[in-house]
Each structure stands twice: as structure tokens, then as C-alpha cells.
Image 1 (cartoon, helix red, strand yellow):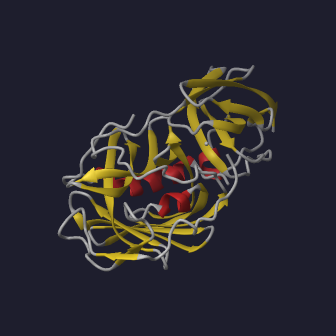
Image 2 (cartoon, rainbow, N blue to C red; image 1 turned 90 degrees about the horizontal axis):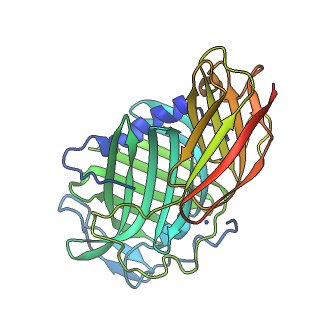
Image 3 (cartoon, one colour; image 1 turned 30 degrees about the horizontal axis):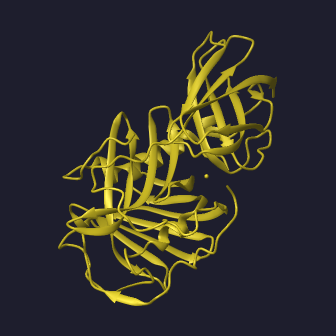
Length: 347
């Protein structure tokens, strides 16, 4: 479904406080297919260990896992899919909707990203890394916010395969700083509960609204992808040129929505990615670029928001322009793909 950028921007500012409140967290420069697998199949209780690879401040309670190597790898299979739901308990209040499309971006990494605008985004990633001599599952939370790039790493410290929970804490400062718990109360239901310095930070109650196929098995093995200095793997980009005939009389905005299923004329659908760009008075064209986009086919809908209010309303209104609905776009596996949309109809 549609989520206004003003809402997402506020939500991401709350989420990215995890990364932007520095305090010793490291910053690093950070540079697909539909069919569901059984998300419970990759985890089963078979071993017990007591470990905290991140900090003496972290928990050292009982953990269970079906993984013979790295603990908790089943989380990546669990996460495959497009997830949608409200984000609450943030420092800025409750936000009605956040969508994130988790897919494999290489044989060992799963990734999802939300674009707020051309300069602000939120991205999550999971992979195995080596820290303090141990190979551990790492959950990364970061992105650009107000021009600042952050990439906070948390490591798995507890996993209960029966309860289907995965508990992560800050790599550098332990659970007293960042404490993140993924839980799956049902096959297509997920809760991400994050606390920062003991205070509620975000509670994302999401549903898997579309499945995504991951390689089987995933990851293909538990070899680490890095040691904490590695950027995300290189991903494709998509450049979209949007044009219209009559120059804008006042400043407006252009939205491009990418989805797997069709959107209606009110842009109602589950968005895999969406992006906006300012369109100044007098303009007849804009260009938008999606970075770190998953390869594969999408349906594309472009909206010319002539009065610039769609971020507040969530929908185009009379006078706004739309492109041909649900144009098919294919993003190549590597490099830059391109697409063009022409505004052909005014509502």
C-alpha cells in the first residue's frame, strides 16, 4: 500500500537514530521472483550453547539452533518476502505503514531498502561476518539520512528455534546500547522490536504480503562475507525518465512506484520500491534513480503531483497526472537499467 514520504521520512529518522547516535558505532561506506518456501523448515532445536560474540554486556542465556555451523541462519529464509506493517513506539510516535522487500542479493546476503527521497533511505541487511575470531550472523541497519551515511552492525546473541526468535545486540557496545529482537508469531507475521539504551525505539508489526524465492539452501554455505569493513555487495540501479507536455505552473513532485502486482489509479498496491523527486515550476521532465534495487520485473506507475500534496494525502487527486498504468520494467542483474514514463492522463 502507499505510504507518504513525509511519514516514511519521520519513521526513518527514528529508525536511523540507531545508527546516527554514533557513540562509538562504526560507520562504513555502503556502496531476485515469487514463490514461497516454508519459512520454518530451516530451523529446529538440536543444540544448546552459551555465547555473546559482541560484548560482555550482552545476554549469555540458553540458545538453540538447528545450524551445525553459524547460529541462526534460518532468519534469512524467514525474512524472504515483501513485508508491510505499522512502525510504532518510535521517538517520533506511530507511523501507519512501512514496506520492505527482502531478497537475496548474492548467495550469502539478504537485503531490503526503503527510499524516502533521492537523499534519504533506510536499508537492512543480513549476512555472516567474522568478529573477534568467530563467524556470526550480523544484522545491519543504516542508510543515508540528512546527508549522513551510517551502517550499524548488530550480532546474533540468542536464537530460540522453537519460539522462532532471533536476538541481536550492538557489535561494539552490546545489548545496553542496541537490542533488537526479530520474532515470527506466524508463518507470514513478523515483529521487530528494537530498544536503544533500554528505551523503546521501534516496534514494526509486519505481514508478509508477497513471497520471494531465495536460493535453496540459503545461504549456500556459512562462509563469512567480511569482517565488518565490507560494504554491501554491488547491486543494479534503475534510471527512470518521466516527462509531460505542459510545463508546471508551480513547483510540484513526481512519484515513481514499482510493484509486483498491479496498482489502481489511486496508486493502491503493495510497493516494492517507491521514490519521489522535486519538479520545479516550468519543468516538463525529471529523472529518478533507484540505487541498490533488486533485479527482476516490476510494474511501474508514475504520478505527476502538481500541487505537491501526495506526501500528505497518500493518493493522487484531481489535477494530478498519471502515466500508462502498470508498465512493465525489467531491471538487469548488473549495471544500470533504464525506463521511460510519459504522463498521459490528468485525473
